Amino acid sequence: MTELGPWGEECFVWRIPQSGLGSGTGSGRVSGPGFAPPAAWWRALEAVARDLRCLRDGRDVDVDQLDWRLSVHDDYFVSIGWESGRLVGGFGGRTGLTMDASYGEAAVRTAESVQDHLAGYEFVQWPSRGRHLLAPRLHGSLPFWFDPHGDVTVAPIGELCEPAGRCPAAEAST
Image (cartoon, rainbow, N blue to C red; front, side):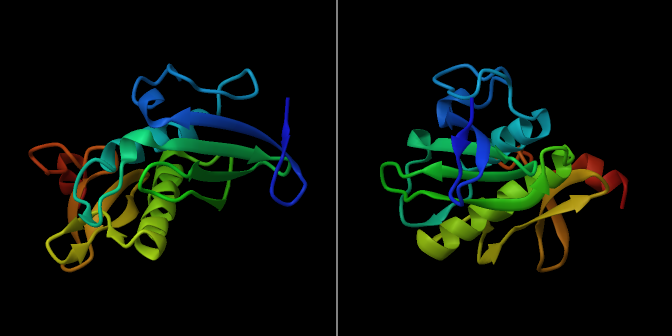
């Protein structure tokens, strides 16, 4: 089963509540075409959803009420976003990557899209450490948050809330 996308093209769409992410199985009220979304994109949404819980600065947004939207269009390109919720507006757009992108690519693009939306429309700096907005970037094939002021690795995408805040995998390969 497909839906029409914003430009009239057919696409597969999964709607995933924030609470449905994290288990890796799509539990909760996930709706979609009856089969699992691309695994790399599912993992990317899970990772960014975990990171949304920390290092936000600015107005309050209720990330627990988000309903994510993941779409694969008829040309195999992926769109991500979320529906409007309590205290946060919706967004969505094409990522410029196809459904066969690697997990690292998908996680960096998802983090960039969410970060751009929050900063541009919600007046939320995420993630920020002090006065520095962190940047998502690939390190090898793995997605990480970097502090561009000094080019310091902060954490893998998905582990931003970990207490140590260290990235042994990135440090070992630098």
